[in-house]
Length: 128
Image (tube, rainbow, N blue to C red; front, side, top):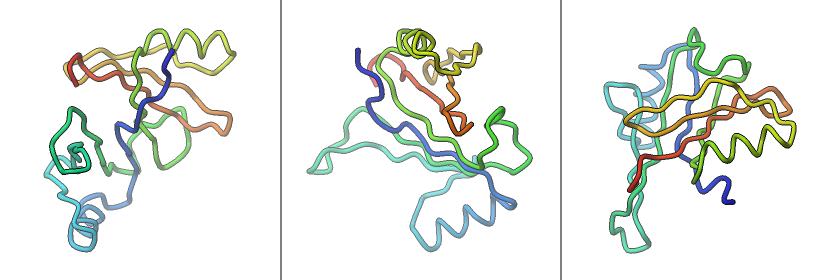
């Protein structure tokens, strides 16, 4: 079974997400949108678009999005078969959160790594 196939997103907290987003836009050229992040569309070596996106997003320090993890960041890993992977992780003794989400953006599940970081696992919608 395939496990992680790529990075779907990087999320982190900031005391002032708007100002930090503006800094990244000005100094690093990241096209930060009004929703607080940017979507990097995947391309091949020649720049031809391919199916796939990596999200980059800044949230507020007050957000509990990363709970029960204590880190100021969370990495979203792209996976091929979320439910099979979650079952495998449970059988391997990993701390898998019971909650999962299924939305127009795909399927989401979470596991806590040995350092206490919340790791998001994402199965994109069919065709992405």
